[in-house]
Length: 126
Image (cartoon, one colour):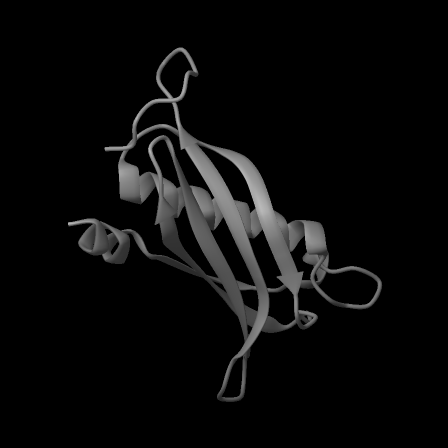
């Protein structure tokens, strides 16, 4: 049951990297990458639990390769741990050139979410 929920909650989003999201090196701002990752992690956590989920931490984010303007990125979120009131989501960002085959892992991160009730108190994940 849990493995099926994990599989069904995997989230994939593609985005184009435009110049308005890049720094003076013409690569994606790290903060923008983290924002996109947190959004994908949130969607993944919510799809898994179907409960109100909030980010409580980003455990580790590794920037392995710069993400240049004019590329396509794929963000993949996958639940990697389920606890009593919290869960962890791994998010990978892959770079694809627009006009060439292949892809490279650029960024990896882990985000922790907690399920909360209407009073913002932690509750058991279903």
